[in-house]
Image (cartoon, rainbow, N blue to C red; front, side):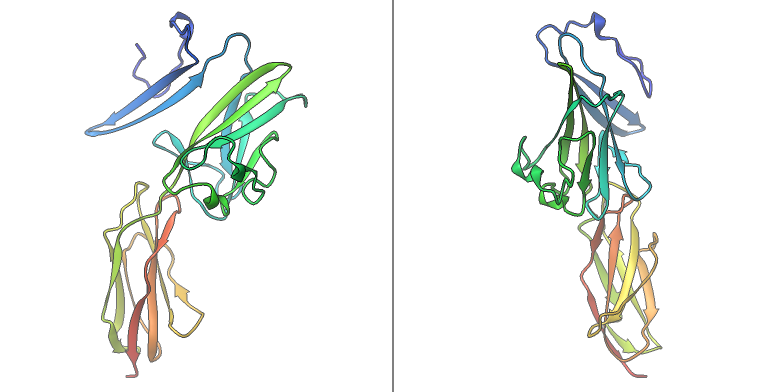
Length: 263
C-alpha cells in the first residue's frame, strides 16, 4: 500500500514485473467534493539503464511551465519552449533521440522535421520548440507525449512527460450599451459574460478605436468584465475585448460598432 503523501518513493523489488514492459503509477487528489487524478507510465528494461529525466521551460516569460491535470501546460504563441535532459552526466558520446506524439501526430510524422517548429532538430542534447509555429502540429486542448531516448555505450535510458496545449477561454460573448449616443457625453459600455476556462481566474482587456482608422487604445488586463468610456469625436467607433485565462491563452471577441454623434 502506498502512503497518502504529497510525494512518495516506490520500491519495485518486491513487485512481480515479469513479462511487463512498463509500470503505471496513478495519483488521486481529493479536496472536499473535488477530485483530480494523474498517471505516469515508466518503461521497464532488463539490465543496466541510464538515469534520464526531462525538464521543460520557457525561454521567455518567467521560465516555468505550469502543471495541470498531470501534464505540463503550454500556450501557443510567440515563446520558445526548451526541453532538456536531467540527471545525465554527458561525455559527448551520447546519442539523443526526441519524439513527440499525440492527437493527429503519429510517431515519426514528417512535420516534426519542420525547422520553423524545431529550429535545431530532434537529435541534439536539447530541443527548442517554436510555439509561434507549433499550431501546425499541435491541437488546442490536445495532450501529447514528449519523449527522449539516450544511448551511451550500448546502454539506453528513456524518459517522457505529458504536455497539454491550453485551450483559450470560450464560448462567451459581450454586450454593449448604448449603441448610439453623443460624443463626450454618453458612456459606451461593453460587458462580457459566460466565458469559461479550466485555468482560472479570467482577465479582460478592452480595446477602442475609430472604425475607419488603424489606431486603437486598450485598457490594462484586469479581472473586471465590464468597461465604459466616453468617446471623443463623432463617427463610427469599434469596441471589443480580449479574454485571457491564467496561463495567458486568449480569445478576442467580435467588434461592436457604436454610432457617435456630435453634441
